[in-house]
Length: 379
Image 1: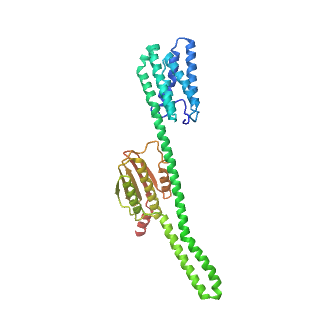
Image 2: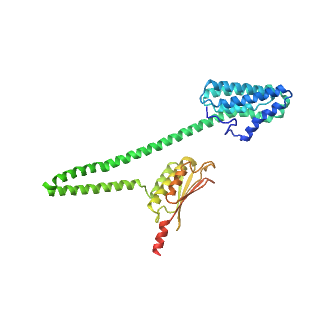
Image 3: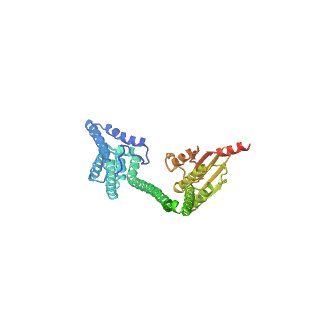
């Protein structure tokens, strides 16, 4: 079973106020009874139903307690329907059954609940004729809810579980990518430096032994050591340069390839070649652009994506706009990679803006400090 909620179910298509009314209504049907014992009996049934209903969510797995809990509440629901004309407990049971993950048990309880509810409603039209006809539209809505709600909730919960599994799988893939990148760096360092450092060590030992006996040979060995060290340093610099990332214009080519592979039309406005932007800032912008376009591919369901680059004397603005489904209001910067973009921009005093109307528009802005310095020096 899912983690138990409060008595009021969530995410069923009805507001909490509607469920509060369903919780209060049984007391109205009880207090309209004429006899004191009928009122006491009705209150006991209501309290017993909600107690069993709440406790039933404590079961974390499909066990016999689920059968017992649902069966007892079905009996209470039938009694309340036939004797007091209150049919709406059936909606609470439909919600509970929809949260059962065991498909066989769900179908069994669904059939039993649907048959008993329709039977109790049919009997209620004879025992509570006046009250049933006065609330006939609401009873029909309740019966439709009993029919549709369990499978609607079951499919929604199944989709959420699959989304959670996909999220966990993506996180594992990201971790594996990081581990693989570390292994690649370790292999590159080993291949680049390991052999040459070993050679430098051997030649240093040999030069130390020959420095007095054969000075000329020792000089030759020292010259080889010097050349080997210079070669190793050059290779390390090339490797570090590759790790630092590409310029924005190079990243733009990869972005276009990613969007084309996802069958999303790509539009570029502005010049991706940045003249006065520091390399660190340009690398940050490249990473932010890649993350933004990745979000477009994963979440937007867009047909086109437009990247705009606006360079002024005071700021550089990078805008990514798609015509997709937009971002829901409850999504914050901590989700969908937006927090990572925001944190990267903080290193270069940048800012991130979000507009979710008519698709999604991300606006990245960084100050043009270098350009101002260059102009000041020329004036």
